Image (cartoon, rainbow, N blue to C red; front, side, top):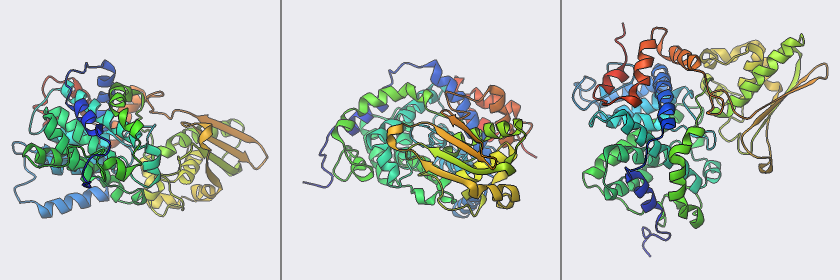
Length: 466
């Protein structure tokens, strides 16, 4: 039997049928969620463009590109928050990397991934060559969100992530390619080849968390989706049954389960709208696995203060995460501000000492703060057994006087079940884009409702800057 021959036919066909179905009715809830995700993702990307990994990436692109690139020309896409224009694939790479650079972008609580940082850079880059409407962007985003989650379930996610694969980057390539195919109206056969190419491009290692490469996972996934769609539209081929083929995506990145694969179409339809209950906009610029613990620590700090105590009275802190919750986190104390984003010990100590966790807390210099450095070694992290169920974090503070204070958080601030308020979202955008960015916030928020995105790249570039 050929290595490329299908042994469990149907999964790719089910995905392609879902992607190319343009009869699915719109849901007002997805449009409302997308408004918030557009402003949040562009905002964190604008802030992310000031970071060293994005600066290095853009410097490399300048060396590689002809001198005339970077200017506004037909078909070029914006590097968000700047007048610079790039080809769609390069724009997707830069904007995806920037969106993920601060680890302040959205997350899917059920599966520890960052859909918007991959999907929106892809869709906005493709829209540079083919103006579309806001509702069409919404429909395409829903397709990509569904593929992200349904394919992750099929692997399944716990096994895939447990092996060290970063599904923002692996399933993200399939999801972004699917979203782009829907946006462009790509025919089924061409879509199948694009999905096949994206599957061969898939990669992304958890071992790179806490390094500059981690945010590039999102950018590479977005770039590769643009590339796969462009090549497929020109006749470039791949295995049109890639997912289920021997040696295909589901075998390589998971353990093929025929029952799960047979349900892929059903799960895609479910997630086409249900994703609105499975996204979170982060209030804190750190790994999603830290968010509930930070919320709990802030509440416990207030309780300590009400009792006349403070961080100096804390003898021990216990943080209990759901089964698998420690996978994206660091085992060793952070050595850099970037590594600190993946440290529950640091972020919980910081929340207990300072009462908040903000962007400036993740510089290398911030790690030397004496009161936080003294408390962090007293924070102890553990996972609960699978039988105790997913979805919550427990933090216990033991004081030197023998008291025990405890908080359980099921939904962190910013979760779809505990959303940020409109003023909180606007305040986060101002932190990222500057104090005079309110008008831009409103322009971006209107994108999913626009009759045409003909001026989208101008909107994404933002207001002129001195």
